[in-house]
Amino acid sequence: MHKLTFPRFEEIPYHRDSTLLLSAVRDLRWPMMLDSGSQGRGKVNIIAAAPAVTLVTRGGETTIEESGQSTIDTADPFELVRSRLGKVTRSFSSLPFEGGAIGYFGYDLARRIEHLPQLAGDIDQLPEMMVGIYDWAIVVDHQHCKSWLVGQGRSGQTRELWPQLRQRLSRTAAHPAAEPLKAVTPFVSAVSRSAYQQAFDAIQEYISAGDCYQVNYTQRFSASVTGDGWPGYQQMRRHNPAPYGAYMLLDGIEVLSFSPERFLQLCHGAILTQPIKGTRPRGSSHGSDLKLKDQLYNSSKDRAENLMIVDLLRNDLGRVAEPGTIQVSELFKVESYATVH
Image (tube, rainbow, N blue to C red; front, side):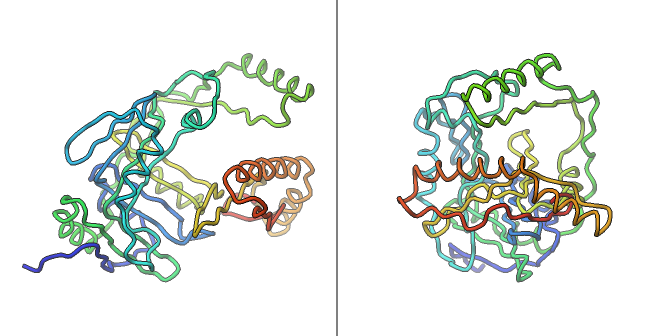
């Protein structure tokens, strides 16, 4: 039998619909897809499953599972992820990802960086962080219509799983449709109408007093559902493709994410952020579409909000970037997507 050597990568059949590849490995633990939707700025999809290490943070503790062993650590979650990433090597410069950390970081982790008050209640009881360290991945390049299976081989699990992965990915086909998500109760807001109005009035007073100049006030809607989120994700990406999407299935927690906005990119020591403020729906005709696009461009409200978020991000980046290196290369540029400008 031919002995496999690692790190290694092998070309596998390309599919424009990358959900076929995720479906082939979705029964493995912690399947993930970072999804460019094969359009817009993003041109690469990254798919992974069966991480070598998982890190789950709740409160002051992070549970780490590795090689069948579970430990609890109270160190900084960011440092715990960084220490595990130190073992990941780069061997193939042509690939954007060869294994590493994929997951989510909750907003509450900001309390590890800044001293912030604990005002909001923890309604959903979700971990603040769920990150897997993946020893293998599938990389899909939509620009060149190629796909690869790449592995570090540091985990014995990867070496054992590799022949099976080859087989699964060489015979991808549409899987039987799972039961789609269905709401069995009405969607209900987490705050009452009167409480929402009271908070809205208070925000206006804060702004008038100069205590703040912008507040992003949101509300959560929830409902009881049955079925599987994966068919819903596939349907959403068909009807509302976004440059930055993600699907994650983490021990019973499903994350479905669609965004036209790049938050942060770090590449060769350069940080890029591309905030978006203000949208308009696409028009039903070419003329109405141009009118809505022009309306957005000339909206003083949307321009003011866009400028605020640009200034905010310039300030945030200024805390970590080299002095004098921050530049705004584009301002008030209108971009068009499948359903919105």
